[in-house]
Length: 159
Image (cartoon, rainbow, N blue to C red; front, side, top):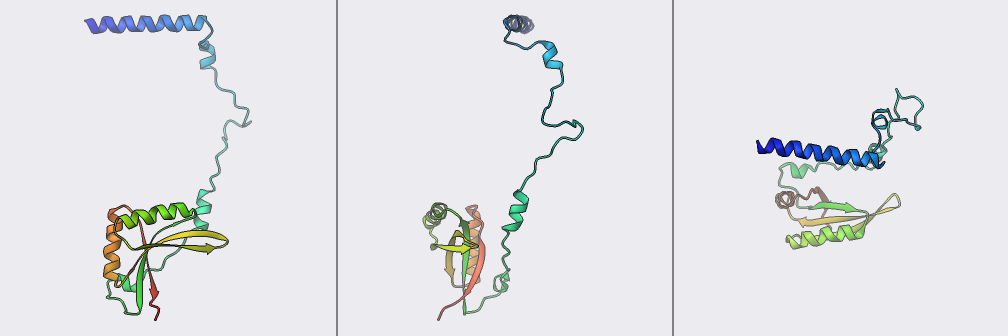
């Protein structure tokens, strides 16, 4: 019974405060709250304007297709190739350096390489090289366990 009394007391106190604030002009009248809002942005209320997002167009233009390496599908790989993982690509050199340091602390052999693409400099974080596709897959699994995505790459071994 005490909780019902407390509820009634709280409701009356709240109602009293609201009444005082309304009399002081601090709360809007009920008519103002129930009146539909006037929109000066659109003259046709049946057809609201939709925002235009450019993200999807920008994303499609910056997509990079990476070929799947035949040697990584399960073969032992040729002796004329070395294998690398691209762990990231950043516009800011500081971001690439931050990832490089984190990967070094995890025990990886890591380098950053600036690359010029259409007048924009990207800083690629490369892990490796790895002698075999098996070593590459093992390193990629370790990166995945650290929630770091990577792209497998191969290059011809320089003689």
